[in-house]
Image (tube, rainbow, N blue to C red; front, side, top):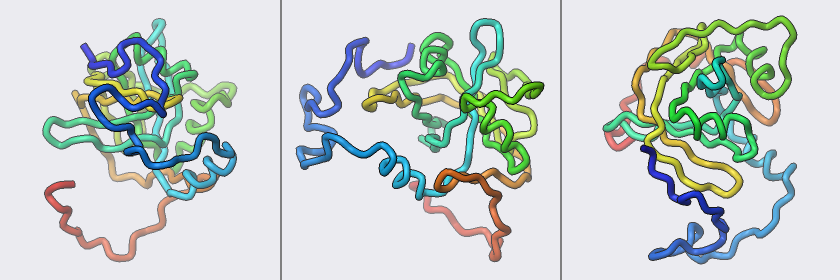
Length: 198
């Protein structure tokens, strides 16, 4: 059973949690923000593009997302952030499992298809692992079970315990400032040691 930090109650993100300091540590913050500026600032960080998937209502469901990251190596965890108003939010609460599919550069059509702009006649191929539908042809895919969820304003952070993962030598799709592109070839392909604490 996933841990639920809000216990079914709506939380004011500006309120201090019981027994601790506020998320901002008491520092002054913006009460209101221009949505367009917020998206522009966040979109300045280039990222990969994922499709979050789950099986609900007898069919595969998907949602395009770039709010994804690695969570932990031991145990293997990944993290996605989903808007509370999104259909996927309800699906994840219902199913308790989700997939993460990192799109390849030639899968841009899926990014729009699963972002509320369905493409007529498009029939994405899925394979099922641990009851989770995964997109065929992705750069990488993971099937996870929800291990925890945390309130994050108008979103919920879902932590997934990885049950299955795979990757392929494909070029990933990249999102930056409202546009899609492909990753240019890295000049120095020598392996760079990653710090153990990463």
